[in-house]
Image: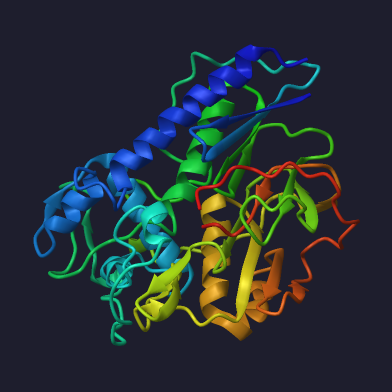
Length: 298
Length: 74
């Protein structure tokens, strides 16, 4: 039987990790280390080992997705009005849809790991939103397992990471198209790695007369075309799962073939609600009837 | 048995302790690396050109038990 001890200790570790990632990578706090780096665009800026790691992971995600998930979309995201907490943005912001303008590109970021500096192009800005939370899930799960010796699942707004010995049936995760959906259509269990969903239906807002969402295509600097409403992917880590899910949203119609080539289990929900799967995804067992929806950040 | 708790309204953590309790490792030193080794402060993966996306080491299974939810909120 699980005492209060392990879960309380695990919660404490997760809380510390959440605070750490917020201090490091929040776009909404001018005192975050990332915002101080963005303010220094155009010159080499010293960063902590933790931010260097988070940026390295963001660049790795960009490399692994052929630049589809690119951390240099920071300025593009701000041009869309997403420059403050989403609780404020969701009410709508004034403005016009900006002109098409590709992001500077992840290859323009210079990381000097020996000097501990990062240089981003003048006028550019980094947004680690596509990787930092997933990285926090991976890190927290790993730390909790190492420190407490138990199996663990960590979910941050739907970015799920597991570590250690799982229950016999694995860690079961429900799949919902919308935040706090009381009746997710499907559930899967995972015993290692991560599971993450990306979607366009939750974080969206009005920009003047336009309806926009938060997944920016770095090739245009504009919200990705909406072919898929939600994509869920399981992978070796939560960072990889989230990267693949976000890349699939941006890829649109060719996403299933891309995911299949990577042998990644994926569930894709089209704008019309039609569900597609890659061959590696397990056949659905039955609909869930009494799920416990998680809190989420939307 | 699995115990679950919500943290700061955005995080959920569930722990599982099997009947044969694994050794308590509270003395273990936490590191800043993820279990995947994805990225490091000294050797950014982006500079290696070897980044990839890989399936988990264990297959994803279908399930029907009540569970935390991933919803595409991110």
